[in-house]
Image (spheres, rainbow, N blue to C red):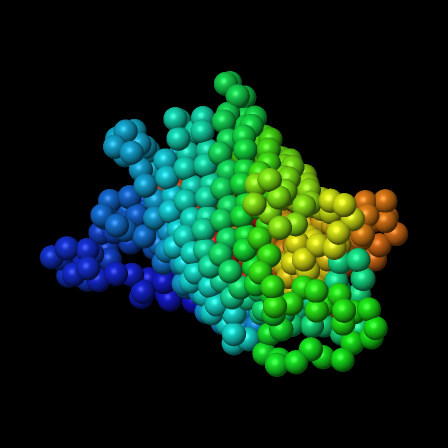
Length: 394
């Protein structure tokens, strides 16, 4: 279903300045001559301004049902075009993305990003800028814990993220710096008045409403990457650790530190099976004991769990996925995850588990880059959700 939808949405030859018929264009640029299957590699690498459309149905429980539309641009150098063979996945020098979304609960947003793999992958850059208005359910407030019921808040404003990393010569280790900037106006979503809440909750909530808060941070990042392909890894490891300081000296209205340690592990078992394990720990620490905005503390980020459903100043997540290759193009997989959220690292051991389970499939839509698309269905403690996936799952 996904393949038919995006294939029908491809730009007409008129838009690309081509004179061939649509049928000839499709056969020349969208069919792999090796296996006769639909493949966007030739279109992305040869057609000026060629891009991979990514239409998606949003079923994220946190924001409701809606639609999103993205476009991926793969930029190759002339040397890469000359040297590349069809049997080896290519890492383009640059990848750009544009996208927009909207859902039935009133959330909307748009933005663009860029990935750079420069100097023969000795220098890596990631950057994204966007503007959004998101209506999101929150189940707890910093310093006050669980709310008596979920409260939908509107978070609106611009955001910017970027990092730049340098590979230590002859290794898979990268070191670099990162920047994160966010300006958020918080208000009640779809409600003209503050609902009745027990004493203490109402006052804390009023302190966070009808105000615009800027969080501006600078930090350091260290990564190790031995994956065979970042878009569709079959084997290898990816470990990252970052530390970011948010401070008034660099334009932040709130002073705090954030930490993240994450590891992705991929193994091949024979020609058919792949096993992946993801481990991640996120934490924040407020400066001077002040309460953080409701959207700052990390949350359990797993397929099947609404965003911000389980928050804490310390969050741990583990997820495992087993894939089976039906063919060179198609694979199916099952996955399960577990997460915990607590106010402090020492409390994680006593926190309740939040478990998920699910299954999905992938199709290798651009063999030249090892790029896949597919769908996952996941079940969490409260509900189920469907996710359209493009590129690596993690």
